[in-house]
Image 1: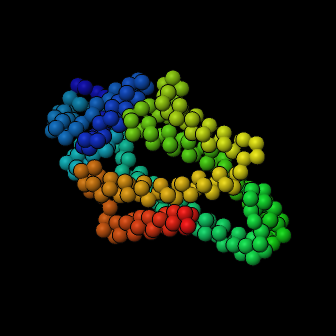
Image 2: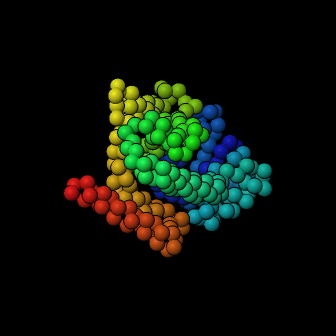
Image 3: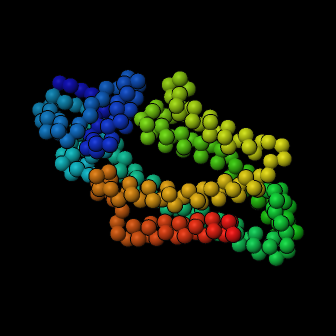
Length: 278
């Protein structure tokens, strides 16, 4: 009988690099692993039925797109194996993304309204973050200044931690490199190199003496806005590729919203360029 710690169910051709990464990580932790692809499914089911194959965990990356893998999940569940279903976890990830996007939009909207209602009517020009914080006090009260300062600190700390990390994870996962803050630099050199470079690139300009912080923030966000339509178009092309996403491609309704958003972003970016050049 072959007993393994982890059985990986996979049916996605583009998953091979990720699966190889999981297998290497398992071996590094002293765990045995085997991967069941569609061509191996019949043999694996027969092995489970006859007792020649046993597994403690099932990492299921196939049954949501290939229902025939549900038989593998049921057999292992009957043998008290723990089922790790990343697709099920995606439901909570989607809810988190929806709530986060809504909250970010509302916060940005009320920032614009608050500043527009207090600073613009009084002819106050903001050149630095300090100007914005101090200018709010006479019109919105002492606590508005404290709230602004706290919000700026919170945004800075989270940006310094989250943006470099998310970029490092995304790049390394795309190339199949080792990732994780729990790794040592020599175990994941690419990950820590990208992470460190992102922090330095973000920190060095704003640490320069007399650096125009508001201008840096404005132009970095302007560049971000100009690049966003290109990113959206690439993402929409990928998410609507059945060969890549299987049954998880966008619905018609979701595509209407997504393509409509992309069109508005492209129009606004073009308007920004035209008004900036005129």
